[in-house]
Length: 144
Image 1: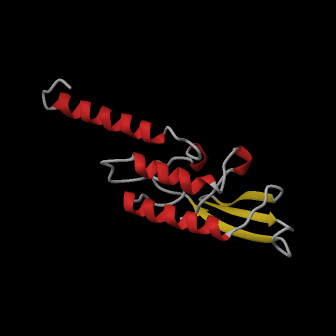
Image 2 (image 1 turned 45 degrees about the vertical axis):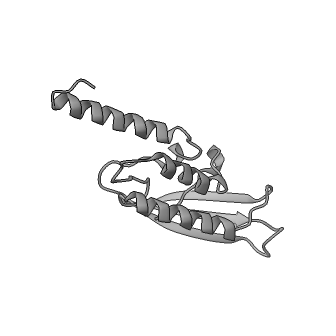
């Protein structure tokens, strides 16, 4: 799994683990979770991913004046290379970089940026479950 945080769009490496934790708390009776850049998962997988992102966040120091440069490069029809560069002279003696290959998925996916800080996600999922329940009851001959 690859975590991507659109810091230029208001995303926050600090808040991403907390946002995942709130999403986990808000989803009930869900068998499958569809993350943006990895295979479908179970809620248990999402909990493990949340712990992973929280652990990474606590290992990386970024001061408010840090400079983070991100680049997305299409390297083939089905692949994008995500690269980042961290410039933080207060905590690190040199600039450091990382990269994560991203592969196309089959089937639907949600863009990661749509969920950063999106505290309405549990309500959206609850509404979808209610619609499914109403449709199932109607198909079975019930009212509501």
